[in-house]
Amino acid sequence: MEKFIQLTDTVVPLDAENVDTDQIIPARFLKATDKEGFGENLFRDWRFDKNGKPNEDFVLNQNKYSGSILLAGNNFGCGSSREHAAWAIKAYGFKAVVSSYFADIFKGNALNNGVLPVQVSPKFLHKLFTSVEIDSNEKFSIDLEKQMIRIESSGDAEHFDIDPYKKTCLINGYDDIDFLTSKLEAIKNYEQKRSGKQAVPQETL
Figure 1 (tube, one colour):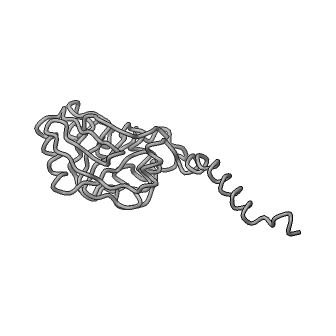
Figure 2 (tube, rainbow, N blue to C red):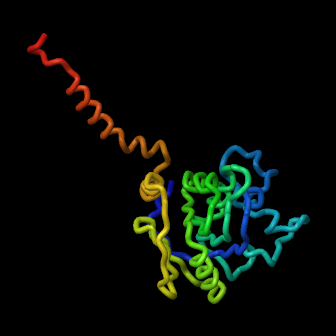
Figure 3 (cartoon, rainbow, N blue to C red):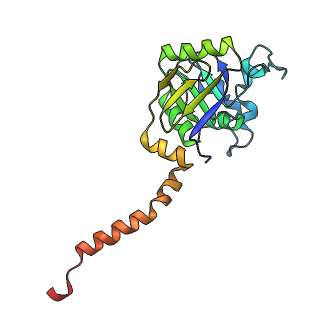
């Protein structure tokens, strides 16, 4: 996976609560078994009408908004446990999603696919939306090492929590297999030391 250490970018504000995984990626697009092409169908039924015409009112179709940070309302990623939702968000180009609450399964799927879910307080989420409403070119800065998110124009910031193991994986660009591989030398050293302790001294035989 791509390493995630720090990110400063403009924001796409999706001011809607209880966005479920079927809205993120409709069920009819789940037949594919690889991750290619899912970005094209992110929020498909909100981005396009039944005739395939773009919905000009939807935020992803508004030219004034762009960037690799998706700002979302409370309870993002609820509903079914489909990993395809994280695939679609990643494939579209989002590197982080900010909300005041994430469904647990979606949060895990996002982390496993290199998308950082940044959970903030409802009060700070309101500040974030307000800052983007005032200036569509507002930038947020996310520092994973310090676990901080900051509004660039005002300097307002808040700490966020993340599982320490997933933090290590994102900073180093590891998936679960990469993480285990990175520990091979330490595992070998441990096994050698343990084997040495259990060996019967030659002079006692």
